[in-house]
View 1 (cartoon, rainbow, N blue to C red):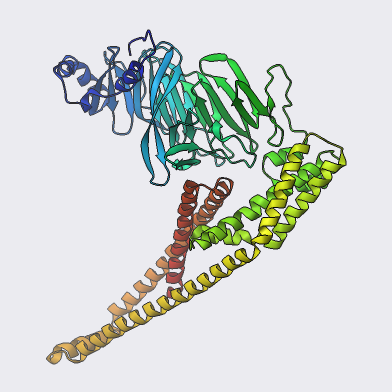
View 2 (view 1 turned 180 degrees about the horizontal axis):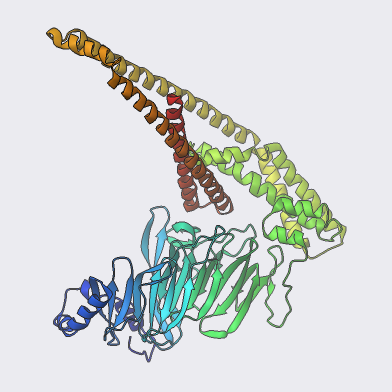
Amino acid sequence: MKKKKSASLTLIVIFILSCLPLSGWSETPEQKELKKQYAEVIKRIKKENKVKTIDLRKANDGTIWFVADNSYSLAMFNSEGKQITPFEEGNNYFHDVRYYPAADNGFSDVPQRGFNSTTQTFFENGSFKLYHRAHKAVVVTFGNYGLSIYTPDGEKIRSIDALKNEDKNYAFLSHRTYPGYIVTGFGEEISCYDKKTKKLVIDAYVNGTLTGIDNKNSNLRTKTHWTRNNVATELGIFETASKFNYGGIYTIDGKTIADSIIGYSISEDQYCIYTRNKDGVNTSGVIKLDDPSFNIPCMFAQIIHSKNKWLVKKSSIDPLTEYNPKALYATEFRDDGEKYYNQEKWQEVIDFYSTKGLDKPWALFFTGMALFQKAYHEGLIYKTSFQSNIEKNDYGFFTNKWYKDCANIPYEQNIGMFEQAATILQAYTEAGDDSIYIKTAKRILKEAGEHKEKMEKNRSSFRAAINKYDQHNAARKAALEAERQQKAAMWGAILGAVSNALQQSLSSGSGSAARTSVSNAGSYRNSPKAQGATATNKEDNTNRKIFLKNQIIDWKNKLKKAEASRSQALDNYNKNPTHEAKRVVESKENTVNECLNMIRQYESELNSLK
């Protein structure tokens, strides 16, 4: 790429074109001439490295280079035939290798696309001006387990490895490149530009599932991690994995902008707000792409940029205050109760302040808040979703799941929890021992009363939904039983017809042929050959039983893993009930059912051999 002396659209065009192979185009006379000119180099690379496929590429800065494919990985060679990157690094094989020419400081118009979660399609969504720093030419190799950055002379600058998960298995490293940057994540990753908030939202999320994106009124909106603490939607913070920080944003030449993160967004004024997760608690920080000296450390539960001011809160329950770079902010929670609250472990909060933290001035506040959150997120939210689906005659898997969750906190107990939360918060406001959370306590106290009143008014409607669901289930079970009996009768009739036809065929055979075949069949049973066959059948049955038992054990192990995976998916959905998260759970449920079906089939066959 030629050095830019002014910011323009040229950079992005050069950036994209510099990575395209000449072999994929309709060849021009110049390209044909280049192939002739480098024919000997190509021949030598093939011979010395035992490769059959080589692409000749020419960047817009005039650099000639080759991509060699040895059928399982790619490597780059320069115009003289010198190998610049390896075919593999450990167990990491490279599916792509690119040359990025040098560039000056400047802005590029990055084309963006949005995603419609309803139609599962992408759409053009404008462009975004992204600042990039000056960098020298580099070569980047991309693999499933990491990427590596090299100089054009083959000197390795750095590697960016895929992180390991709880089971010590490597996560696939996905990536996206922008002019001057490499964005990494786990699984699929997409960037979207929100015209309303004017932010480029770059997200790395688990297993290719799209979380927190919807298309309302044809305007792409971004949602938050939904940590129950009203993290600002306009920050564009996404949920990826609650325990793992897989994402990162780096300059194209390997300098770290922000790593070990679960989500981030970049505003048009080039502020990058990023989020990390530690011990189940999300914290955010801010850097400025065009001003490395600007930094808000990654230690706040919420950060908002409003009217040229930065507002922050250290804990999810704290009030927003203007950020002061000279102030000393607490780096730890005041006690375990506050930490549990930020981890959304409501019962642990209640248990802590009823024992070890009983004497804390804020004990009443956190107890009341945790009770409210538990009543809402572990009770009311399921009842509301269940009732809504039943009223729309939706009896799908999620309705069944919500039906079971409704029983975790009975309806009347749910009402009582809101009432008790209000009582405790009222006591906090009157105690006078602590005044930090008075405003929040009064607001939640009011909300608790409203939820209690709505549930009391909705009592009969919810019971009607429960009855409707039970009746539907009873009718469904009856229909399935009738269908089973009908199939049994049908197969009985078919087998009876086949048996009768066989008997008629034997009894009405022509002359002695039919009688001979029947006679031979009878004499065969007592022959030595038949006795040997019987022994063989017994041996076959024994081997089959061993096979079936091993298969049952194997599928039961698969079932345990599938159920654990489904449980994790359900937890993710409960925290962020999006359409895409629902699809993930349904997929996990299908896997569980497949395991159960295989176990039943093998057990049925095994029982028939006993």
